[in-house]
Length: 242
Image (cartoon, rainbow, N blue to C red; front, side):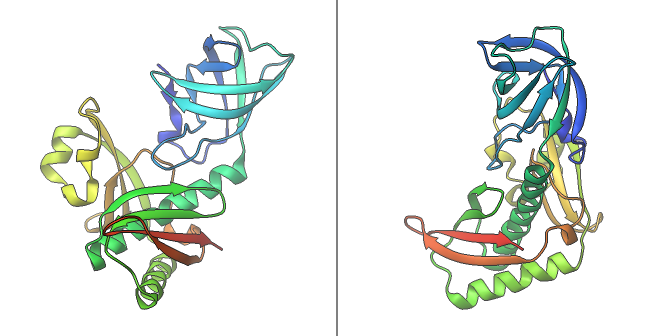
């Protein structure tokens, strides 16, 4: 099974790995990777994988039973199992996803704290994002307040950290509304927790397998660009980062 190293070090952009398997002609499985696979509303990383002789472009990363790197280029053939490869991740794309994912956590926390609006979905991109929540309808005054509150939290430069917990311990000790552990399959017995704020009394704490910036000050200015109704009693809030 691929060692998902991006969970430990989201800032690492280059690494070496060994090819464990090749599926079809374009799906490479490595013994370890820092490439993030699509999941949890966060898109996959892109970049390159190379040997001493050839270079392939990583156009997609998917997590199934193992993490598969979909590659293109080279001489038309995938690398051989056992080959040593150098990975190089697109820094600008990764950085954008880290900023947007941390901003989404802040937005989820503000909506839950101040509007009792639970997040039901989200999708991040490199230049915008949206979040769906259980709420009847936000008005312009709500959006102005939410935007102001988010930027206060950015200006506070709160620390962001992550760690893993046994699922039973997490369910026994953490707030289920915030962590949303019930959304995870029962087969996941170790959960990754992301916290924002003071270690003794964090502003937010939730289960998450995404990549994040180390402090909220690195998010940049949050601008809410609109809202749309998503069916009965659900709203979508859209935002960009400057």
